[in-house]
Image (cartoon, rainbow, N blue to C red):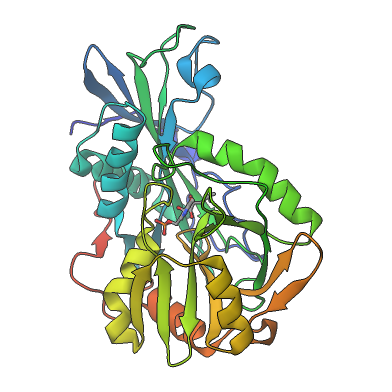
Length: 362
Ligand code: PLP
Ligand code: COI
């Protein structure tokens, strides 16, 4: 792809490696540049890297009224060789196109999406946060820009990539398990809907549940299916639990569950970590029973931003709650976390194709 570079003058760009002295927040910081490409007249065109800043958008743009927008979340890591590597970005690009299909957005070839991300990281490579546990969070997104109030598929779009030097999603990192609220009041997705797309609207729709969970001191809601029978997701993460003996169970992917790259990765490398992993429909009543009987010894959430976040307590709307593993991080969750982040950071050999070096282009 022929990317046009319209970069900030050198005097206004970061010139030294970024060595933050405080733990970085998740997702708040920006870098010097962003990537943009337009869709019009039936084709993606005009790929460019420009200074990070505001963009022009018509007040009548479809995205502002009807939410035709999708996004991805990926990460890049710096290894001991001082090079930056993106982690399983091809999977994100593939999922972006799956979301595009669901939201009637024109697809972008995976290699083009990946090149856009790599080119942007290359330009802003000095922004990599050199701090234990930090990474470059990558946010590609596509939104509808046609200025039209009629409800129909937009004829024009923008694909953009921004990157954010970030610390852990849950600031206490891996040391303190989170709490989830079990409720039948809110549902994340309905069959035949957009639950398996990373659609912006899914996240807007989840805010209410998040606020409700906070009233119980919980970070997120444990989402159930619309019949309130099966466990679906842990807020913005897939859910997992671990059986005595070390079998990881992740709810089977359906059209109401986002197909997590973290989940798929852990299933792929389970053997190497020394655990078993499988997917099945997980009944809520069996899950609660399993915790009470001691058959389920650990549980938590899986996702790019939050990596592996153990859950130590499930609270019900009546105020009752149930603890898992005495509200402490369990040994299997720790083992999985260490192995997974070991691969990401280059300390443990990665399966072929999982990491891609950000080559120098400019
Ligand atoms: N489920 C939802 C609803 C999410 O938003 C995410 C985050 O991306 C995940 C699961 C985890 O997916 P991944 O591991 O690909 O980040
Ligand atoms: C991610 O895990 O990457 C996500 O996109 C979730 C987001 C709400 C931070």
